[in-house]
Picture: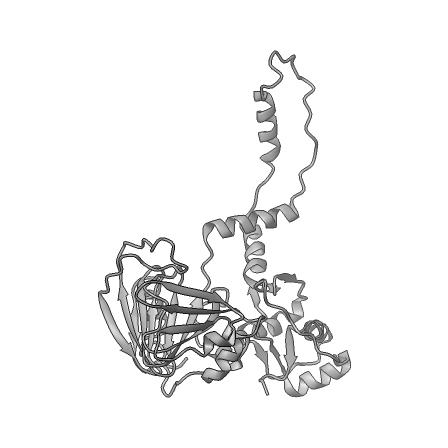
Length: 375
């Protein structure tokens, strides 16, 4: 890992002293960095109906929010007025953005979420707010002033289209230049204000709520639930009040439902599928004319393979999940898939028929591509 990325700190030290604990300002985290795409290319993405984008503007009286696809009229506003364009999931659209996100591979892929790019005119921003997840804010072009606060008051402005903090009181502030980066733990209040036109790249991390996890896990259990028997009450007594729910019925059903249980193994199976599941708007593009298994094997042996940027391949021990589905992996293929999951590419693929068959299936699904690198 580049020693500049964390300001000279080792990943171990950063995780111990800063991760989810306190902010860290890193000057020149990526030397020479000035962004990943031009403004016009960013605006073109914001107009695409398949890409998540937002337009935010404000004046002294109110905030305006419009969700993409964004019309041209919004993107032609004078740069002398404060406005912002946000594009989510840049890592799914640009190999360079995916490579930026993978610089943080000292954190589990299961926690990495996406890269968002924010373009702002002078004075633009999204207002003082807080995020429920960790974020690295990397300055691209231009300059942005960041104000932060550890305040406990996280009450929001009523009726605003954005989650704007009502009583933001900055405690520290810095101006970030190209290549500078600011790490913020969850729920740390912050406000970014553009000084002239600028772009900022946000590397965000996935942090589902307990309610989200609980709901998804119950869905997981429901799909696998197999309770035997039927309700029966051979000792039913005469009811004097037929509208009364019998206590014996409640007890009997409680006994039947006690057969619902789960283990750590079930939690692991759930998490592997849940955390590798693509977001609802993500779709894969199978090749128009897929190579035959034999031709794929020859090309993969020569050029290797790489996972599609949208693919999430996770593992736990000898278990693997790809894009929400558990994978049956024969013993002889474990080492190959461990390397692919960790590095997201294989420089070459051997002649193991089982591994080739599995990789060819994924290639036909659009989950991976021939060639260890783009291009």
